Image 1 (tube, helix red, strand yellow):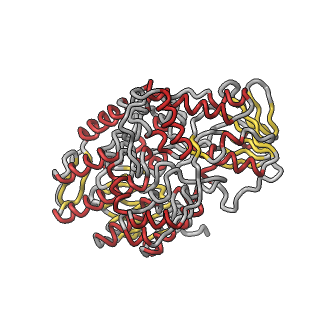
Image 2 (image 1 turned 90 degrees about the vertical axis):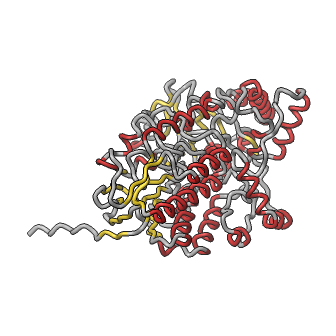
Image 3 (image 1 turned 135 degrees about the vertical axis):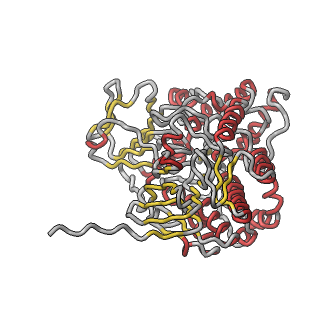
Length: 550
């Protein structure tokens, strides 16, 4: 006799469901459970907390925000109970920090691990989001909050022949937890964005040969990473309130001000000295040396040429230096990496650079890569440092359907439409933490995450206090916000980097839309606060007996 069908899993109902247990999901759980007293369940695909820091374990994985700023500031207890060891912490240390947060706030009891969401549908009649995981578990709640991260859906290039490769292929965003031994191996790394720039120096130390396949040359600034001494750790804890205030007032969420002078109003000597000081100090503050680096092409050119000169200075082989310095976009219009010995790596005898813009990859062969010219590169390991389907990829892969069965994939067919990067028309009670249309990736992420989590928690508290069942972004508000996001982007030089993942240009077929909000974190925070204070204009609310009309 045929086996009886397995009955569907019993549905578990909560006040709110949160998808993801990284920085955003952990804080959202705490805010809803411990401040509002809600029954909350977090669904996490991985086997532990950490989000992007659970998955991204590639060699050299490191934060590009300074450690004392890359932390939760909503809790003085958390700040005082943790010590960072380095200026720019590595992945294992950040993962330990997030586990510390989960333990300190007793969050694990409300997190289900190994729960990859494959379907989330709005049930209009019941006023609930119904969510299904890959293994068939079912959950329901009136509120659904996505905390899936902006850089969590890997982008794998579709290169013919990959299945025939006799060696190993790894993507930096899905790195084996047991690590990869490159000793004595011939390694080919495709991609020179932030992950490739971090990984190359570490891989080169172990590999017999590292060949870096570069399509787009990139700026990078030395991190000047160093251990933190006790005096600095003490200073950061004693001045936490001032650091928090500085981050909240800064356009990029970092604890340093943007320069007040134009790069064009000072002498060439003074400008060079300012850039050199920032270069020697290391880190992202170089882009804030002058106020107009991101808004005036002539000002930007001064910073761009300074960095290109440093590349030519560091890299000994003139032909290699020329390829690395042939950068086709203004400085900081793509996410600007910081590095530990990236350009110096090309001075090693076992490292080579191949320009695949001039000679593209034709296919992966059983023994390596073949270029269009016919040149063959014998490899044992291929590393894809090709980044992510940023900002929308993870959201679109969860099968989210709103009112009337409207699929998020269809709603965003021409690009993402949100109100404040927080809600989507047609999707009641769905909130997107650091979603498209918010500052997100243009900022120090914990600052952006805290602001979103707190706004969402306050919004849900408002609905419950007023006896309201749903809140949803209006179509007109989303249209207006998308226009404002475009205006903010066009006030900068960032759209001039036509192949940037800010525009979705790294993913074939993805709509070319500038996704993050470039108007600055401080300005955005003020806009969100004003919307809440005015009773949420741009959002439509409905009581328990009413529904938002289509």
